[in-house]
Amino acid sequence: MKKSFTLVELMIVIAILAILVAIVIFTLNPSRLFDNFRDSRRVSDIVTINKAINFMETWNSNGINYGNSMTVYLSLPDSSSTCSSYTLPTLATGYSYSCKPSNVYRNTDSTGWIPLDFTISSSNKYINILPIDPTNDSTYFYSYFPGGSYELIARLKNSNTNSTSDNGFYDDAYELGSPNRTNFTPVPKNLILNGNAETTIGWTGVSSLSTDAYEGQYSFRIDGYHNVVQTKAFKVDPNKRYKMSICLKSVGSGGLSYYLFGIHFYDKLNREISCKMNNHNVNTKTTLAQPLNSGDTIVYLNSTANWNITYPYIGFYPFEDYPDYTYTRNVYQFNSIDTENNSITLSSSYTGDTFPSETKAVNLTSSNCALMYPHALNNVPNTWGCYSWEVFGQPSLSNSNKIFRYGTATMKLVLLCNYVQSDDRSLLIDDLKIELISNQ
Image (cartoon, rainbow, N blue to C red):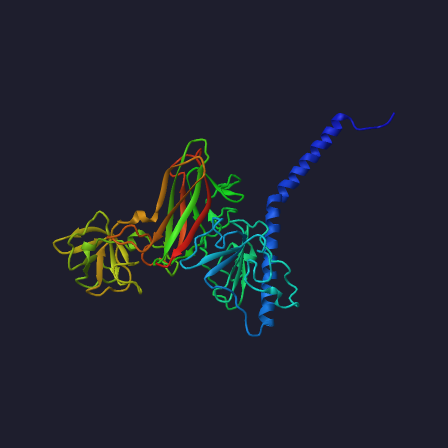
């Protein structure tokens, strides 16, 4: 008789092998590996192109023509010279895209997607054919921008040290170029770190990552009522206009989710700016009738006309180098108003430097505080939907549509997900963006 495995033993071995294969696949994450391979090739291609251009700069002692400084040259093949067949980010005013037909777009003789003649010297061995992005679609492509000598850009699937330490304009792209580059691109930049929700880096409050994504591999999943907050503030200019956008989907068994999109504002010293620090009733502007000294509980004003105990806070100006009645951290709560004596009683004794007579004062108010939440949706659909809006300017009583609080230098996002709802409501979030769209 010959010894052999029984059917049961074979089934056990096959089951064990299947489990091991599943563990290996889960651990290695092939999709992630392929993404990393493509990113490595992107970095390598940009380095190769950059070396070829550096050689041309050295070989041509009289300098080279880098191309039209108002044009962004793309690695995408297109019969349209302006790349109109693709849905691409809107460029700043005056700039345009350039694409070349598929039969020439990889040529190295200046007729390809980069308008430089790499064949001018037989010694240039770096490029025989112009590299293109391994995906090369409307999301992932190479770009060449001659503004300030030149800059080469390749968007990466996963941000890494190549994209974050290259001194470039983008956190999710690898950028190389001339030392004289202006480090500017007319293509809008997403100011939000990890707005593509591919990891939880840069955020708190995310329950998990979901493979149900609007774009890319993952999205943020939030179960129940949680605040999702950025861990790092990013710079903004209140005098410029920005576009905000977000993609959402309800997936919980309890029904449709509620959400609020909010903003935390910070000044140039990284101090959070609360609503009452730059909102006041314009009809309550007055000055101190006598100095306010440390230890005082009574504040004597030249007028208490129109002052209201409903929002019992007083603000003093000036504050640092901000204009009067715009932003102050000299904010104190009061308990009562004496209209006959034009005075207010503070909730606690004043401590600090003396405010002299005629120091400007005002009754602060809660007006415009809702501007911290510029967008809300009560019933997020159970299919992916994307929403966008613009934010710009500093608010005033005459224009409450302006969003940035006075003194804002940086800001963080806060998302109130499944707002005041139970744990059986779940919300998916993807493709968070804040982009500068206008200098006015």
